[in-house]
Amino acid sequence: MRTGKGEHGKPYPLTEDDRDDSAYRENGFNILVSNNIALERSLPDIRHPNCKHKVYLEKLPNTSIIIPFHNEGWTSLLRTIYSIINRTPDILIAEIILVDDFSDREHLKEKLEEYMARFTKVRIVRTKKREGLIRTRLLGASMAKGEVLTFLDSHCEVNVNWLPPLLNQIALNHKTIVCPMIDVIDHNHFGYEAQAGDAMRGAFDWEMYYKRIPIPPELQRSDPSDPFESPVMAGGLFAVDREWFWELGGYDPGLEIWGGEQYEISFKVWMCGGGMFDVPCSRVGHIYRKYVPYKVPSGTSLARNLKRVAETWMDEFAEYVYQRRPEYRHLSTGDISAQKELRKHLKCKDFKWFMAAVAWDVPKYYPPVEPPPAAWGEIRNVAANLCVDSKHGATGTELRLDVCVKDGSERTWSHEQALRFHV
Figure 1 (tube, rainbow, N blue to C red):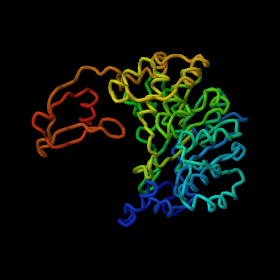
Figure 2 (cartoon, one colour; figure 1 turned 45 degrees about the vertical axis):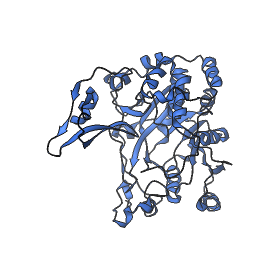
Figure 3 (cartoon, rainbow, N blue to C red; figure 1 turned 30 degrees about the vertical axis):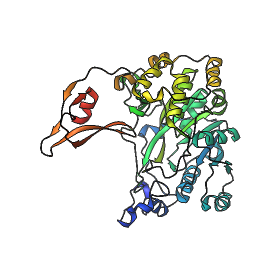
Figure 4 (cartoon, rainbow, N blue to C red; figure 1 turned 120 degrees about the vertical axis):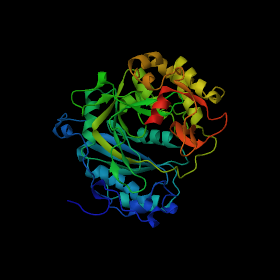
């Protein structure tokens, strides 16, 4: 019954002034829009209809909800908290831990402490220096008392009955990591909608970019709202049994700031006796930033993190990464002896097993060994006199139209590239 701008997840009506870059500068999303929609706004229930009839265990484990943040916007952080409190059975929340990663904005200091005092289950933990996402999560997990650890980002909105489906899956098997469906909150107008393709398996290419691929027929359930296996997680939002998380060694503490940690925890859980599921009846909206608004500390490297994961977990398959990223070969991973020893202690399977038993459908979309070219030549838009070229972007190699270059526009085209261009 709620009415108003942004209610029911509707896009906020933007004016030209609302789109000014200053609205995005501090947060990477439009903070003016965030400030002008209700902190407790309504969202559309976009779950599969079957979710409304599912029955979960009467006794579910409780959870510590861990939310790391660094210089987060005031209203986006509060909206995250309100959505959790309003849409979660109180008995299932042991605590909500806000972990401040050395923020320097005034509204996140005494003002935040005073505001959060109204919520009995919220507590704030602060780092003494900039630690980054990975170690900040580890700090929150080390202080948690709940039976399950649930990690969320600081600019989310959880949806209807989001938590019981996650906890139910863990109650059935404590060696399970579970992830909600991650919906999209638009960084411009804050409209709420399902991610493109909705329920899909998490995957990766051999440059270690996260991908999403269709659920193969062999894994499709008669009820599409049932949980399904996923090889890797997106990284930001998941729940895990607290004891199992620490038995797995938590995150590798040698990983810096952010990046690669989703592969490390995904490979580890599968190869060391557990499993990972995406849960369609659990939905959480997340703001994907327009750009990263803060500086990453100098001396940190995503490439180093990825090599560390590859050297620890991927065995001979790491070579496929180095073939595409030759600059990784000579990077130092730091000391990984403790991670190797953990893998030995847990009697983990090898990566060949992982690719055959868990990620067997990934090579269909991202083959380790590139197949022969489907074609050779130039693809030219005659009307615009532009040629198809490739550009290396944040999500991998992207195709674009560019100025035709004599003897430079001809190239090999894979089946996947040709198909993407045609579409």
